[in-house]
Image (spheres, rainbow, N blue to C red):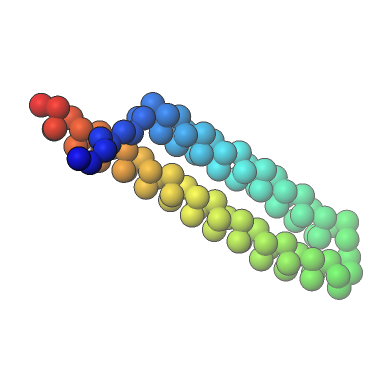
Length: 94
């Protein structure tokens, strides 16, 4: 006999909420860091290395933004699975 399915909806909802908050916090910090880097490379630091640093930072920042988007996508997929499971469980209980 197959083992019964178990899905702790409250735990999953809490996890998804924490994941979204984590991403929001990371995005806010990345935005602040980007502003600091823009200030540094546009006013306080005039040298060829400044442009290299700016380009490297922009590449890194782009990768971090993509990572955050991917992480949020995973979180959304978990939310979707939770909703599907909940609907299935409700229909089986009826």
